[in-house]
Amino acid sequence: MHAMHYELTLPGDYDMGIIRNRVARVGHLLDDWDGLGFKAYLVRERGVHGSPVNQYAPFYLWNTVEGMNRFLWGGAFQRLVNDFGRPEVVQWTGLAYEEGGAAGSPAAVAVRRRQRMAEGGELVAVMEEAVGETRRLAGEDGAVLATAAVDPHRWELVHFSLWEHDMPKAEGDVFQVLHLSEPGRGGLPRGRQW
Image (cartoon, rainbow, N blue to C red; front, side, top):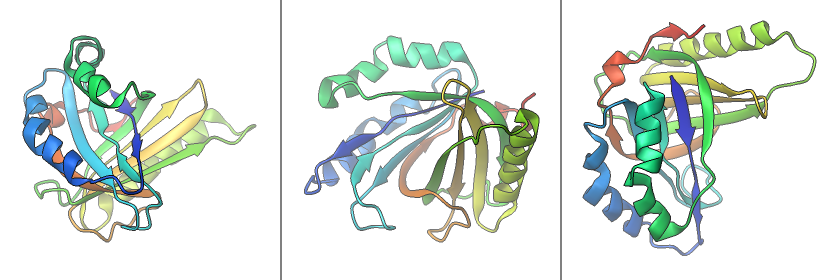
């Protein structure tokens, strides 16, 4: 399981309707992408949910590296690069995944929290804490799903959750969900990933 994310930060006066129309036009193209657990098409709008910026910032959870690589190098990602330039793509190794009590509901918002790991801690304890946080988030009212992943190059954790309502019980950056492609979500392994 691999998490992937990129952000396109747009000007403060950018018409976010352009992004909404883009997602409405092309979002379905990944609805049956082999190797993709899910892709959440996300936006933040300046002044909404406390966001200081306008952003288009999709989040992916991949079942296979082959599916991810085919997306990045096979032409699908190139369309975004052609239109907006090449963003920095961040990848993390999956630690945990859980379905929430609202798993059958459409997702309204997502919450992403990135955090650097403190020096000196026992790695297994930090990873177990991330797994526990994933379980906690998935157990909250309105949670659709929750996941955690780690980048051992930068020693950074990411917690990501989807919510059926706009009052999530999670800390982090809040995004509006425009579309959810989830061809392999049912095949994502549950629980701890080691």
